[in-house]
Amino acid sequence: QVQLVESGGGLVQAGGSLRLSCAASGRTFSRYTMAWFRQAPGKEREFVAALSWSGGITYYADSVKGRFTISKDNAKNTVYLQMNNLKPEDTAVYYCAAKRGIINYDGPREYDYWGQGTQVTVSS
Image (cartoon, rainbow, N blue to C red):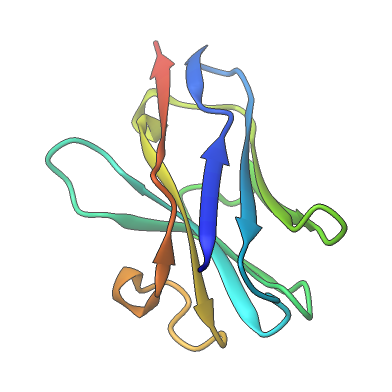
């Protein structure tokens, strides 16, 4: 049974930083793509960043390039999202997700496994 458990959300002022964690368990993720999505109230879930577990290749939404960094710790089976220079428009529930392969990495419907989400609120 695959489990993804997010942590690290909270309230931060604009310009501040947060680091989200996603602890993954239940299988070997070497052929998986791990991603972060976010969903603000009244909006669709949108792609934030993705990482291919085996190759370490990363992808980012244009809105977060240069500010967010996705990374992994193989020993801990954990994926991180370091978020710097946060803006009020980054406010959302952030979800960790996993899928096999890298094709269509930015499509939420492509992902098989999801965490419960963690709230990030950025005040102006």
